[in-house]
Length: 567
Image 1 (tube, rainbow, N blue to C red):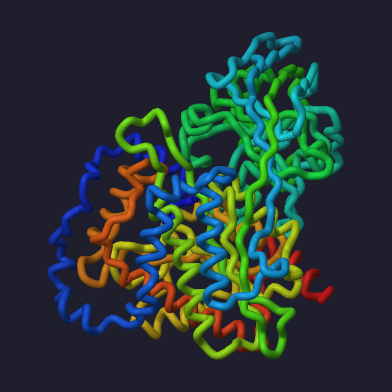
Image 2: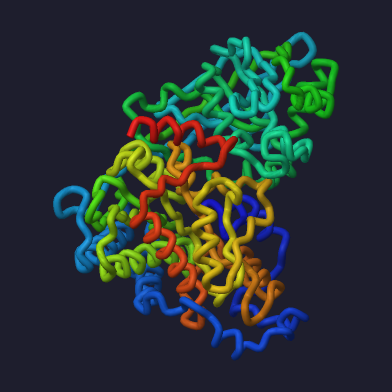
């Protein structure tokens, strides 16, 4: 998964590096004041919805077993996984999406940079070379063996944002074709903490570096460079430069030739060097960029860089089955989770398999359990579909493929629920919404959460932009209202401090490590409660006339409005 719980994957990498916590066994409950105030036996007797589907544990344990080899796309582990899910869908009576088949092939490309040059900067006041990984990062998403940007003029474009709903356009009146755009990460709301500017401290889609590269490509830029700063990025430079440089992407007809030739990052120090050559500094330019009247600034420097790649193509699969609606079969409510994980590390003599029990066998098992529950219930008026997507760990690619090639038309997709890393630590009072205050789905969630004696809570760090880092986001981008929620940290029986300790320990010991294994002592009553809520929300939508939307002013509202108008 990309975010874990409500934290981004990159943030968690930082936490793992900074926190020393043992991982040999679950943390012992802490006797806080909150804990002491709760009588476990009494609290347990009052819990509702903890017996949703008793088969869930078996599904989770099987998917997380060594037999499934870490569920890496395009490996024998994938074959076992997609067969297991497909056979389950067939056994419980779900319809296939292609005759009797539940598989949607996904065409992927792997791009391995085998040689990246330094970035040569040249100008009247600056002639230097920025070193790869130390001072800059550069890559290409174009599916080609070599790209080169030569003597491309640098232009500072502020935050690199075009946001009509916020009356903001950093590219207004600007032609950057063939040029290199340089911009800040995150958005003006985060920088000012002004709640009336974008979404204040909560990151919008316009703050994500992925958006900035997409917009730069739409503007015709040859190269796009984001200035890295730890606080607005929510992770350090080592996260940018220290991981694998290998990129995965979808195979498109144009082989991504509509993207900029080169995308990348500059360190804060490199950006300071560029601004100093202009006779200014990073803080001064940030203040300029925070104005709606900002005008792009030529930087008086040209850049050259080249990237050589090894290219390989592969095929993976999404898995989808559905229950056909009794009255409106063309309208659908969607449940989704990613089935893939990181595969096998054959160099590890002790524990080779990345089992991915929580991330995300837990969500895939929930898809299977929910599908089974729906199959036994009265037939819904609208169709209900269950989608297990591939290659989330490679960049949300399976969900991106589905968004481009939907089985049900997007303007007939009522809404969706995404499940990524479920709660295995027992019943929690809070249901945390990642991307809180985004859509009308939250009122439906609140109704059924409160029926369990629980409450809905926002994610604690919205500035990290976790809403944009899991599979639901690809459906959101094309207008479909998506709910991404999960049990939080406010344990019924042990209190908030204990709940937070469990999540923190997982982040440190097990996230994206071989230690993410099934534990028979997990308290799965919490995930049972969450599945119960998700079922109620989906059934409510599937048996109603509702067409929930994004709230006014949200970045996906206009897309949804246009989509529904074309129904």
